Image 1 (cartoon, rainbow, N blue to C red):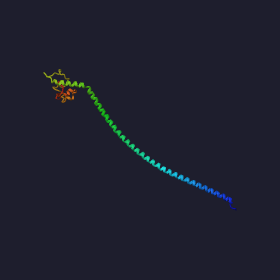
Image 2: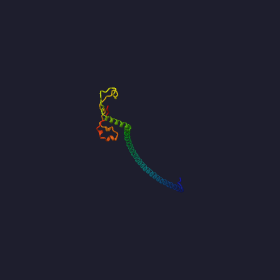
Image 3: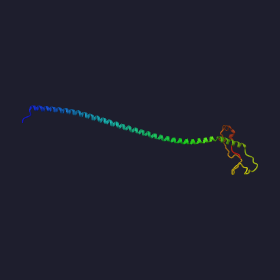
Image 4: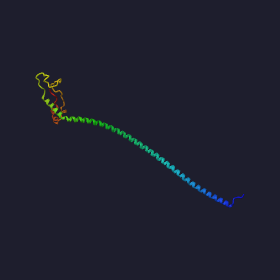
Amino acid sequence: MSGPSPVQIREANAHLVAVHRRAAELEARLGAAERTVREQAESLIRKDEQLRGALRELGRAKDREIADLQEKLFSSEGTVQRLLTVIQEKDALIMQLKHRSELLHKICQRRPLLDSLLAYMAEGEQLGPLARSGPPSASSSPLPDGAPETDGPTCPLSNSQAFSLSEDDLDDKDLDQTMFGTTV
């Protein structure tokens, strides 16, 4: 048994050196790759933490905005209810004023009739009571059957100005004491 020849030993040594060099080169590349992977992992962890923090802050901001909007909505609903109540009150007031306006319009349409009625009442009051010569007969009475006969005003009014519609009547001080009524 003979040992390897010097040429074989040299070739084997050269091969071992090349393998050793290749292994060192691969280890260096592996170390660089591990450092790169480790740096990338650390960077990804930092970015992940930053993104999680930003996401939490975004969630809190969203919750605050939702709470603010809910508060504004609640306030707006209260305002709407108050305004609806005011509208209903105003509508009721409008209906009352409309009815009063219609009544006033009807009264104004009948003013000439009221003026003439008051003039006739004043003229009748100035005439005074009728003188009777005897007991009245049923056939000569101008009153309808069953109507009571009276000797004086049947409807005395203490304030004639309440019925006067002309300004001439308002200036007449004698009318303050006059009592209007009908005479039979």
